[in-house]
Image (cartoon, rainbow, N blue to C red; front, top):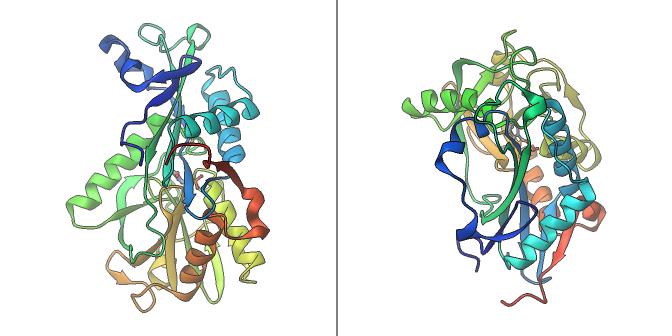
Length: 315
Ligand SMILES: Cc1ncc(COP(=O)(O)O)c(C=O)c1O
């Protein structure tokens, strides 16, 4: 089993031993301001001795978009990054569910924070164990936060900019103080946007409804997968449109979805029980479907996974 800290991280263009990957303390203030990242997961299949990395290319393409929007040069193509991730997973002998975290940051941002042409970027990629909660009875109680979600005219939620997460952190701290698990955020138009680290979907009258990509959400890769699965496998209609907060109070099912959230059932919103207050049928079916795909047990969606053969690494 890999330790919490991996043997290597990818940094400064090479695999670097964890203990050697250090920066000077004076560089911490501004380097994260425009930093962008990805959150990617690999799912271990013991029988196959393979780690299935979910939609790696899509995540790396989104990293390219994020760097483009914040004007940080990345300097690697998606296939190059993909090869690096696979090499890192093998070198770190990741034989368990694993989180992969590429981060692109301003390497010398100290006095250059408003001068994009002067910024040079650095890339690090780390791995760490992260167990799945799919098909456990993990579920959440949500509260609509009083904090408004950032918008495209302020800080674009469409990309994974580290600074964006201050907004979600304020919301999470607020609702957790009051005993709730997860914040739901409204956009400046008062419509539902997303949770601080996941998208929101609900089921009403046999349809899946989710805020559209101009509602102030990250263009989530899991949300995209869920939409495909609901249409293709459950035969249900999916509607992407602005969503009112009270629709969630009246919904039959509500869940969040994302790389970290996977599919997480939400059983109450602002103390309104969702449906019967139990995990709904559609949510349950989606969780099972997704788990099979993530673990490499569903041939039809095999192309969603980059499967890393760990048979040659030591157990
Ligand atoms: C703000 C936010 N929204 C939504 C998501 C879900 O996106 P994805 O499914 O691509 O992980 C994430 C990340 O997981 C996120 O950070």
